[in-house]
Image (cartoon, rainbow, N blue to C red; front, top):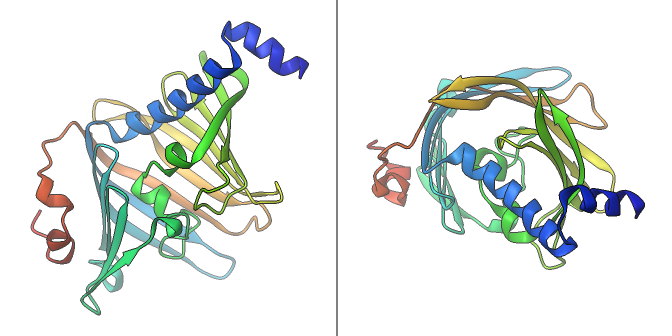
Length: 247
């Protein structure tokens, strides 16, 4: 309690406003990455004890409600895609030529067998809709303030985590994101390994998701290209384009 009081004195704000500020820090970090719109090409490497594979993806976003993720390699997975539009998500597999609607409760499920979730890949904003946020520490990183934020889901939230801990710099860069189960045990942690100017701003270009109890199991996403504030047409985020890509 003493530490929290000291923190509030440092922030010079009331507890209620501190919660609002914590939420704004999380939202600003999401908005900073997605921007008004974004396009990126990333490699996702999934590592297990006996095997490893890399999947290349193209990702488009527009605002907080529209995301399209499409696999471009390897050949056997090429064309698999996910569309997030408002509060709905669909997947498409060209092998079976079928669209499948995925409920929001499954946004935290593993994406293509990786340690990242559908929510992570789509950069969805469930953490804003279903969690209460609190600043629990302030430190510094490379000369910038670093906020440690505890995010606790509301009792009705369709999420699997008991809590999440985020470390976000004052310039909106997410440096670390830890996920805890309902018993408050750490399950996995995402750490930003590299920052680089790309698309006109500083972004995280290498993010490593590590399981807590299986050090040999991890997933890493490396950004190869990124552009922001693009004029992406609305028809990009349609079921028709998900099934038959034209853009």
